[in-house]
Length: 406
Image (cartoon, rainbow, N blue to C red; front, side, top):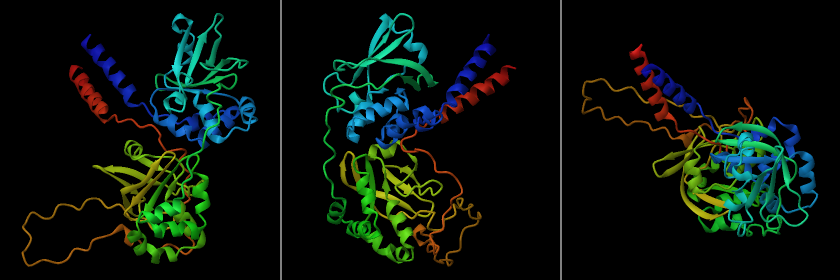
């Protein structure tokens, strides 16, 4: 009995330790009939919000149903609110939907969670009718808006994410109400006043300013090098081609809003405005104590301050220019030096040690040569992660115990 119990515990631990985060973009990409819905989850930045949550249900609608929504010509911010009604902050797999207690329940959606909904308008009623029919309707659905019905299960990862298809769009008067866009933010003026004038000038001269402005509505994070950092970098910048200069400036923008807390909790690869297919132009966000660092494999920069944080726009000041490996040679990762010989060093040997500064990487190749070896990592902003090191350790311990019993 002891052996059976131990084996069961080991199996349970291993199952838990292999749990991975979900990526809604990849899940929906397997279903062409849901491609329009998938596209709008991405451009409204709901995809990253879905990916960072651990327990969630997504009610996808097919291309025909999405076309009916788009025919209303709603602003993108309003489309985001409507699609937010299709994301439940709870897990509803096919089995659970057909076993609802007392036949009906009400669940909160991302529309409610964002604070955009008034009163109970961010909730959806789910009804399990006789004959196995399951219907969905917004609590404040207006007259003449029919309930959507369950079509099929698209993908389920129990108690993590359930993606189902429903017959047509869920909507409500509140969700479709006109929404004021974000307040107009003049990025270049803001940067110039906050010690980043040199970078704001590059935004204009490189032709990248329009791309930054186009992303403000959907969410934008900017990493702005200080004037001092950019001043020392300018000799390298002048060696770049026109295309390379534009790519470098775009590399300092991320097409999604990322507060400092979100950056700290979502360490890992991050795509940028310069990312384009195999041209990755990504970097790694990594915590270092209380600091947040941005690692490009050429240089490591640290966030030193926040110029503005008003969702959907946030601008940070950083202490170094971000140098992408697509334009500059990587600094090889060197293992920690081996311990010195045990004998004590001689007092007179006081030679200076050469320090290697990542910023002193070789000048860029003439044409901004790129490492186009692999496809771009899809929607890494906000992808789920599992801190399961302790669990693996526990499983190993259980395994050792089982071997001892044998």
